[in-house]
Image (cartoon, rainbow, N blue to C red; front, side, top):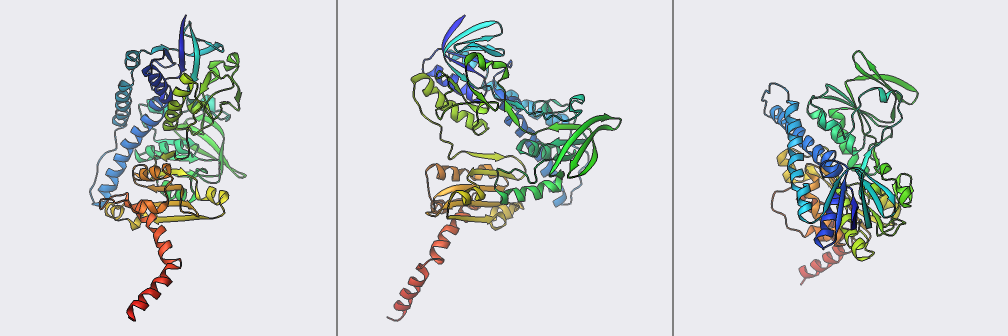
Length: 475
């Protein structure tokens, strides 16, 4: 048995941040991870492998587009084994940066195995008893598997298994049109797979700005088959592969495919923890915490996908930094989610910050919306990538309350807006930023310029200026 000042359960983004931060401050720390390697969901199943796959697929897509543009003939198909190798290479390199040795060198004791609470201050890991003064639950999430008749009779894929496939399916049916489903669907379509996406809602991505989603949907529908307002009722093996029965309204039909990817969402991975033994409150599958990330057991904290905050790696990291000082020094600091962005890494990328236009109109009596198409921005015209938009949303005083974009590399060139919102700037201040010509970031400036155009030309100033210049003329 060993005792620690802080026990961190889960070696993902937040867990590693907390363990490294606490150990650097001199605390005696244990870090528990159920996998043989640290890194968590992001490294093994999420951000890293999916973005590596997307990048490889995007290379193939751009190559084909460029060949068609310049009337060049390409022979052969992309070798999927090369794509798989690029995914594995990215994971291995990043994993080496956050290996067990790094934490051991910091003085952290790393335990490999599934953790289970025995009491509010004791956990068991691979037969060992670990005692802690403070605990942090950071065990991530797992795929939700819907109760579809026959699904358990096939070897369906999830985002936790698809990256281990050694062969590309000729046909892929994806259940779920959220961020994970669309990113992977489009990547496989770019690699040459015939993809069908089944989404139960009447529209894609309800949490995103409608104007941006409309642009994305137009692009998606050019590359794969999308069925909205449709559900999967049954799945069964067949001689030709897999038969999936789907229903739209009162109409049912069968779609044949070679593989099925389940991407309907994720849920906290907390069952094995036996939180009931620790007396930790769980509601609707999530660990309940207050604003300072404490559970009802004041010495136990929870972060990341185990709680109902924003389900992103960068948010887990933000929460991890907050928990270090709260757990070690008894502070009650709160993470600030107000200026947290996220990106859906489709082609084109979909960027989200703050309120959507629909949310802003519900919350505020008066808002201002400044938007421009990428076909008005020289760099996008030069590159021939003009499909997309930028939208800046402000309150009646001009302060930024939301920003959205869809376009090539939108997650990169919209970052200055994140900084502006964190500073509580007005839209007009973005207009004063000087950008080298020609870059994609000029899209932000062009949208922000509309703020001054409205102030200068739609208000009383033009009338006063006309009178002034008329008076000057008459002197």
